[in-house]
Length: 167
Image 1 (cartoon, one colour):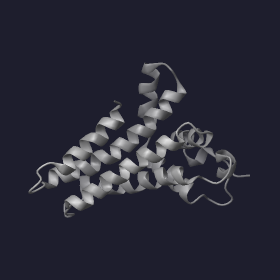
Image 2 (image 1 turned 45 degrees about the vertical axis):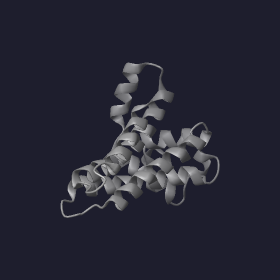
Image 3 (image 1 turned 135 degrees about the vertical axis):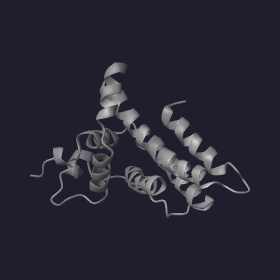
């Protein structure tokens, strides 16, 4: 089992712990962990494709930036105009990649709320929905992960939108 899968399992466990009275700590950790599950899924696939050297993969993984990955996902969802992204992706971005990009942005927002908004109250339904969205993103990624469009998406997450020049 990969780290990403373990994190998703942990998020599912936390959201269901303390059945009668879930704690804010468990629900917040579930939400935060769901984001990190998707983050590590994408980063792990990207670095595994970049090099077979485990020590180099570890260094490359640390080079991914949460903010830049978010910007790349937003650019995939709403490409800047004129956009070279259809050329990069070989056409329009498919439904599964859009689902992954949407989930990444949403989960990152929810992670920030869970980790930093002390006034926000999470209920089990909120947390369960967030964790479920991470699970759906995993499923969507499994469908497209070996496609050329997924390769382009991973490169975009690493290099960022500014690396893609418009004509």
